[in-house]
Image 1 (cartoon, rainbow, N blue to C red):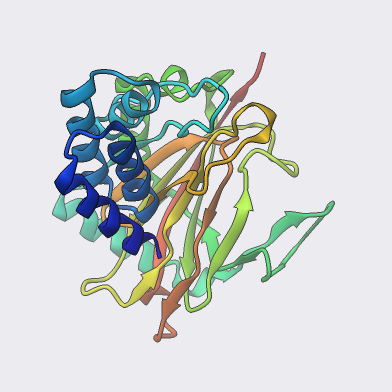
Image 2: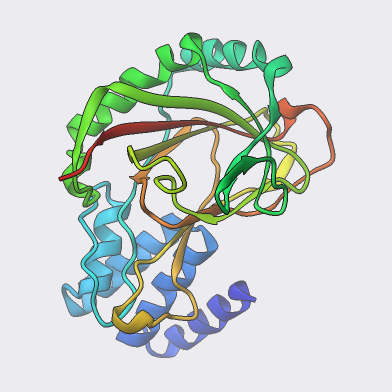
Length: 278
């Protein structure tokens, strides 16, 4: 449906190429479809024609690797996040894959804290997980820590608090057919110490699954106002990572995968940086 709306907007833009409302719609639709490169191009078109505007400038900054904290207003605001591609070298990717492969036998159904208890609840979260271990974190943590410093992520993502070096959680997660995780935040239900989420994606090539995109929900506007499209979809590209604040509402969309081997599914390494809040 969104693809059809995008096509209709693009046809109208052929007659009115500088129309501000149509360009804004195009930016929203592209980010909801997960076509972030096209969203960045639409932002550039808007800025060239009309100059800075709050939502356009925010999205352009995020997609240019310069996120800024979201300020609640009368309308929903895109949450800041930092996407990074080509995180590891080919040799490092091979080493990470070997480390993840060694964890295959330790993968077990993911538990979730839900309605006051801890247990497996497939209607909320359906995946397999295992603690990441030193071989995995040894490859990813140095890159993640460097990005936190280089991009000043505590400030850029609007995190209220200070990260501590001595507490980082790490897990490997596999989503197979039907795998998903409903809308949630990472700092609730007993995880209040989490401040920053980092998700690294990897998969076999050619890819054996579809779906599994990450949805980051926009910050609601005052009075709970919502737009019909108020989220950013992030595809799980191999050797990519995304950072966002642990209190951001997000979800993992359902996965389709015909194979039973967890390593054929949507794989991720999830890192959570803990800290203290004021």
